[in-house]
Amino acid sequence: MRIIAWNCRGLENASAVRGLLDVQKRESPDILFLSETKMDWKRIEMFRWILSMPNLLVKECKGLSGGLALFWRKEIDLTVTSISKYHIDALIKEEGKGEWRFTGIYGEPKAEDKEKTWRLMRILKNRWKKPWLCAGDFNEILFNYEKEGGQPRNHTYLEMFRTTLEECHLQDLGLVGDAFTWRNNHHSATGYIKERLDRAVACDQWRRANPLTRVINGDPRHSDHRPIIVEIGEREVSWGNPNGRGDMKFEAKWLE
Image (cartoon, rainbow, N blue to C red; front, side, top):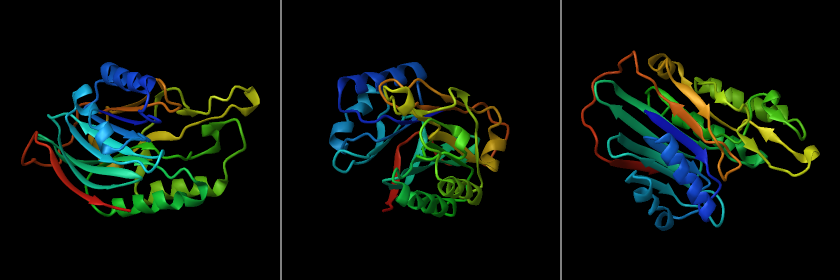
């Protein structure tokens, strides 16, 4: 299975659409989580057929900012369980291998409000006792070596992020490719900043069940963020027998 989480920075122009289609063509994801779509449901719905991923859930943007979308192929047995401006959470069943969770994350960009994201993650941690994978734009780094250029990040914010992952029993899955997932593309060398804001993390149970997983920091295309490509290799651990397959399911709770 292949999951992509990408801050696409809007889909309202031709270059953005070309970038998204290129991701779909080259990477062929089974599940695609997009943040900062800057679109409402009506405008983003056309991508279901363009991407050949007919299952879709949307958290609409507010004004010209935000917006989330989760696409998945018809073969994927996925049930959305909750959604907010910061996340889409889903349960995934695989025949003969059991059930696990995927959460697409979009972290609060404002420094003074970052605790909202971390509080949400702690709530999600206690909601389902399933193997758990999270991926997306967390809008924060873990260590100052994950940033080059500009002023060092306030240590308090880094510690809050690290503490949240520890409390949620989530560990970074590493990366293949460029170590930095975001760039401000400033024209001046003195103003140029790059950071690792996007990543995939998982609990120990999920990691042990998927030892061949690798995370690739992909080509950014039109966006200033790189897509996070999670390639899940063949599993060695079973979580039980699923009851159902293939159909789209929707049982979402809206969390604000």
